[in-house]
Image (cartoon, rainbow, N blue to C red; front, side, top):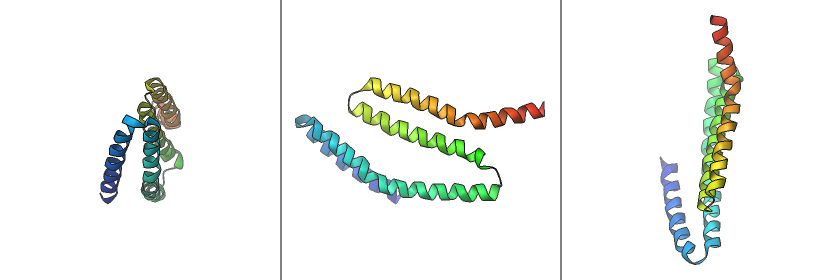
Length: 128
């Protein structure tokens, strides 16, 4: 919760600053947004490290192979990168690039999940 409050405050300040600058200096507004992203990365990466640590423990305790968890983690990472990239493209008023990134992210997520889907298919074949 503390992380969310800090990110909220950071985003509000950054958004107001970017909005004020956008009217006069569009390029400076983009740098404010870029600075906002760079300022938010360290606390978010710390949270990501905690989540990955949890998944390591979960993998050890469940005795499931890493091939089960790896596609899920890759898909989440792809979704996050796609979401951030799409937002940045839309901020730069490039809807076409944003749409292309969404399509690319969807394809990459599907490809990342493919090994897991193949495992499910093999299990179904064994059951029949």
